[in-house]
Length: 166
Image (cartoon, rainbow, N blue to C red; front, side):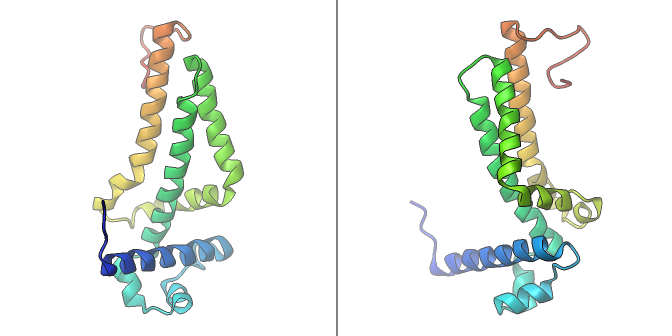
């Protein structure tokens, strides 16, 4: 059983508060309207406290994007687990992406903001792998489905193609 200390729980709750406010500000005011000053004002915490959790506003945006991508990945995994031939399962993963985009258009907007080169550049190198984890998982799922499609005859690759290239 994972028992968090009161201090750990308070830190996590405070981080959630910062993320909730950052999400709302980002969606209402855009990238330039999201500032640590505004987050501090709305949460009644000092900017220094916010910086203990997030080194810059770009880190807040990336964390919001990571959460959304995790949710999208869960839908894609459900699509890939659909009972059917690989071709149908690939289709189901595409439907999962479409459903996610329709149900959570704000998340799509956050991804678009997050993927700007100017934001990615400001993320510390030790947090960069976190950015790509969900995308790598999606690629692995799709490669597996392509391999299964080839194995059962649903897909025929040219001799110089590989499942990874597809």
